[in-house]
Image (cartoon, rainbow over all chains, first blue to last red; front, side, top):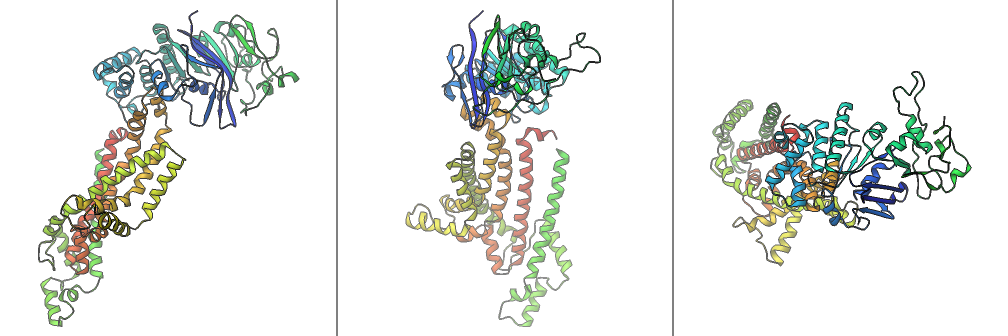
Length: 328
Length: 305
């Protein structure tokens, strides 16, 4: 295995001292690896992505035991130094393709400025590169698109433009925050296939944030399941799907209908309730109120344990436990 | 776009027609024009002669349509006091008023844009509050008072700028500042609000994710969008400034259109008053329309509509 491209250890993000959005998350992305971060809305996966890119809103407090990109410590890096990495060696695409492009500038202008900023490319060279990448992300007539404004493009096209724009400087790491959530199902599949292809062809390290386990199964090398600001289970994809250990992971997987596995009239699994909002100082397992295996020790300190090769979870249960993941 | 323009044009013409009517009616509400033209020592015969000579003995409706018909052809009649064509009088003084208005606008933008950007970037800090306080002060200050204060300080005590007249560009600086202050509060607040909205938008997050410089994020990506309403309002403000320069032109003795209106009102020179009101109103309406077009040019999303 190659050296880790992105290392995040014990990442914490708090907003205004009242909400702990991320509580000790650890994620590692190796070079050329797709690492999926999954979880429900509000579990802190997007905040984790923004924290990695140093794009958190004002008023957010970030701390970590380790936060490094290619061995470079990002924790105390100033905004200017960080801006030389962003868009250059580490890029990001977002959930909202409709609003993520500046309405006042053409696609070409927004794409070329990245290359001009980081590589000092000429306008002509940058335009050539932009056209090449638009072609690469499956946009026909790149020349036409470069001169168009974002409002003239569909959501799917805009997300393709965002992806192409993120690739302008040949980044080593791409952070994709639910890039398909806002799109039509058919377009979702196209964009995912595109991301998977680009990841493989360009050897990208991809940190893909999603709540779609179908996506995870198709593209991820490694999966981390997040719940209430913590990574509760992390494992290679095949292992996680074959042998989920954490009650929450099991609950999540039960929610996914698998043709042939689910009986025709049996109710689909669900996890009642929502992710709790956690204040700083919260102790114990955050899932215990929704867990089918809860007991008194769940309010105590929960150990992080290794339960297989590259497989870790945050739960007091023995790996071989049986029963319902979520409260029935 | 064409439909939009056509609709705006129709509204503009209607507004101009309304102003035309009001200008005519209001001047006639100020008393018997023949008596005031003839002067305090005139006999009844004199007044009758004046009434006949100026066509004031005709029915008001006929007078109105006669005036409108001529005004549409650019003929505003002759001034009673200056004994000159009204159109020529206005044409002669328009450059002064336009220079003053443009000076005021440039100064207003030069103050408002940086202040608005600063306030937005430092939202809810002392800098933001200071900017808002200055804007409020500008709103509250009567322009003639500010004009006099500037004359005393910059003109008399420091001797930096001439106090009155139109001899050189320096004569426009002080009145320009005073005029600008009437537009600064609105433009500053608009810039601030626009910048705050823009800075919180997804495309600014994208710009940051692209690693662009702070200057590029603020000025290229945020201000470009925040400036769209500001530019439009600035055009409308210019209309206000051109029309509202009466006070400032008289304080600084600038012989512009506003000064002409002020003089003519005092002398009951109603063809001039009517014409000035109409010309300024038409300019204002035209600038408002221009603002809409400018909006469409600056915002690519409106261009196709």
